[in-house]
Length: 140
Image (cartoon, rainbow, N blue to C red; front, side, top):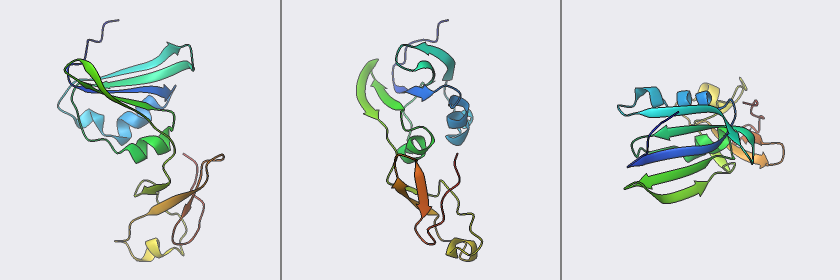
């Protein structure tokens, strides 16, 4: 399998096996006007199996969304065929407009223009709570 070398772009590595398509859809990578390569269930010494996404263009990424979906992702920025920057993601402290509050009594249900903002309250269990009503977010 030959995917090709990236001159300028992004490699999302260490994606938990099976979450690659979720990330592809959430980031709307199908709408990009560049090559996007998905590698699913690649062998990994560290993880057993993993997914990898190669984007053959440097684009803006919402790292909070990526960190929320899969906090183990490594984001590699490639410039002139060389690794320019590497960032290991973790669970973000706050996510805005990623999770929607399902509490019908929450102010976000009444005030439609309010942002849906959730704060990480327990990193071990990956629990997020609405900053307005303290409702617990449903798991991904």
